[in-house]
Length: 620
Image (cartoon, rainbow, N blue to C red; front, side):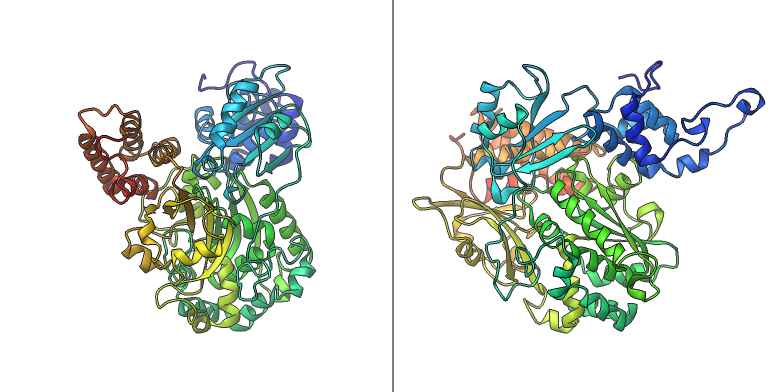
């Protein structure tokens, strides 16, 4: 594509209307309005204002995608005029995200997950049937009104296999379908209405010991009164009684560790931001859980959205944040609608806005949707994406607590971490820390999927073993034998059947040579081809590398190539030479990559080789 304004490429009326809904009507010739004539045509005004709205670039791209099904040259030109963004720059942003199309495609698209968990439940056969009965991915046979694509994990691993329908138009529709089948996907492609959004299974629903999941499945998530009847907003009221310093003290004393994978002390992060003199402060909730096998945050947002709103308000109050953002995964339409409604209700009832609960504290929250980029789960990549740039991680230092979103001090926590704060405030820091272990306090949400009788989101006290979790999930299906468990997701590591007594704590998994990561527990029986599964993990990292640094950009490709040769039984120079190459590439990525994606891209691969002895000499 020519990286400049394409002559004669103008937006359609639909595209203009979509952009006006996000950006407002253009005010001058400077940003897409009528051009002046005469002497006034020699001057321009409003450029600084337009450039200050650069952060609306991704929402504007989404507006076009949802209205017409793709981002046309005319539509992209109009965005560039309206925001005064160079065309090459805007194209670079649009092409970064997998859910945005820069080539014409049908308005009706079905994304079919073929990632590691769905593969355990027949996704490869489902895809083969679609190819045979409809056509290869990306094709639009018949009247050309629909097409389908393979997709990485859609976050519906508890109900695999999964698909996501996107239908563009004046009233766009996005809806997850899980579990699904080839027949169901073909019906969607034929134009039939999708079934209702799947309800997240919570196998422990009703258990009185639950903390984070206690309201999920018990209350109507759309009713604020239901939330309050089950203790909602008691924590915020208590926070106002404690004051910002008191809340910081409780969070510090709780020893709450971040639940997103890095396991950084939340209290330390909050205090560092609270002490920063620069203003404003920002709060970002990382709800972009794109790790294959992860779905716990989605369950919280869909089933108990007000808890996240309340927790963010407490975090903002304690750290002096004026505004919050929920950076939400683009593949989570149900969570988007649940949160959007919760925010609206909270504003109307005085729990958000200029005077929260009459306490003289001003705070509000905005949702920003990601658009299909795993790397945007990295905290600084989130900043880049919200600000309207490619979601590429920044070098550190400076750290987000000093210079984060828009160059200001920023708190970044994921959904599960924030929701834990409600219990911290209500039970006190020491009270919270009395549960769990010395280092791993509180409870942990685990995403249990694969070959178990009852997949779903489970809440366990830190210290429970892998064996305990498998028993909670009903164990293996009858007649199946356990082959391995992937803990921590694609960026985690494999454990063998001999490792079932590993305690699921931060220190316990570290001692066992793995990580809790995002809480994934993917159970694999003896029918799984581990070699091909490992190669799918490598392909995921190759696709999701942002390409900014050479070790990750090249290393993920070389890793997948070596695995492909091993799976094909055609190693170059012998199996041991290929394994040595994989180890060397992995070491390079760990040592020299800018961010955590490159540093963990070989973790599962190397653990499969070292712990499970996949790809031994003479095997595929």
